[in-house]
Image (tube, rainbow, N blue to C red):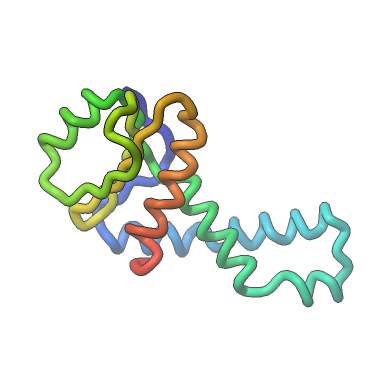
Length: 136
């Protein structure tokens, strides 16, 4: 089993503070990407909306969530000791699981067979949607 990512939260307040903190980074990323795409001032003003920056913030936040990657047996061992609710997606007959523990005694997990990087990315998006979108 191994862990990837940076953000793990003990509380909703910690998650909100971190989400707020990535806002300026998201704005900078959007501005630099627009510059690399050679947007002039008018095109930038027209195309780079608050929704664009918010989407970048959501993606940045989600991409840094801490996830655990392990075998099904390692996941089951962890799950037996976890007191919260776990939403698991995927098929039971595959060998690996990736999971994220959010604040408020909720976790999400996804099973995968071979494509670990894809499973990690998918789980992070699901974790954001299921655990954080309404909180932050």
